[in-house]
Amino acid sequence: MTRPNIVGVTGAAGFVGANLVERLLDEGRTVIGIDDMSTGAIENVARFLDHPNFTLHQYDCRDTQRLRADWADVDGIIHLAAMKIPRYEGGLRTMQVNVDGSHAAFEVAIALDVPVVFASTSDVYGNAKAPFREDGEIVLGPPTSRRWCYATSKLFDEHLALRLAEEQGLKVAILRLFNCYGPYNHATWWGGPMSVFFEEMLDGKQIEIHGDGKQVRSFTFVSDTVDGFVRALDTPESWGEVINIGNDNPITIIDLAHKVQAAVGVEDAIPDHLTSFESMGANYQDVYYRVPSTEKAKRILGYEAQVGLDEGIERTLAYIRERRAAEASRDQTLASA
Image: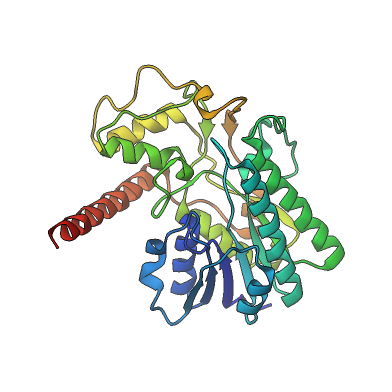
């Protein structure tokens, strides 16, 4: 099989999507992107809109008929579009978008007989024992806690994909992503703790750290996450497999906050008293350890994260400062017009 050269991407204007589009275009591939802009932003892909090999369609990825028409010529699909953990509300929408959107992408892949790489999440492991292994246990919390809507929807999608592979021939690789960060990430909690830490510190505010700050995470720079998708797309041996994509060097949230504070060059951004999870609604439950086993990614994809945390923080901070300067300049221009 030759590598897919016309690639359909859902969530193309989102954080990972924008970085993935850039990688695929740099490799000379054609990208047909889909995004309803509910969480993506046209600014993320503005630099590609005149590119001869890039097309962006704005609509909900659950529209199977339109997907089938717009992707008639694709020879590979990457399905990124999803709603994330409903921290305060929106649990029903999270379930509907993630389940129905994935089903649509899988159905189109079957109809076209092309491979699809599906973005799942490390959240499906719940509070299992780390390091998380793809064939290991899954320990999700109760349905009375809304935060598990996201993990449950993604786990359902994984089961759906693998059953479609068994019974209808779907060529699918499932990637469980671990705490991706970097340029074009959402500037709110939607983008994760690192995004919020940068934005609030640069605004001269104290940050929020929930719980005791000792939660352990493995942060993966976005170029490494994107590399996992490209490798899976180009590797037929990944079909029918669930593979962790992440950096296996963990850090606590409180230590991450101190690293970001040092990089930004501010003091007293970290509060003495941390924030209770009660602020996120009744029965919110956190995951305390989220560290991947990366052996399978190395064996099947030849994948290993390349960007260390210190370098990733520096590159992310440089992007955020550049973005904020451009926004300030634009605002000043509009104000004086």
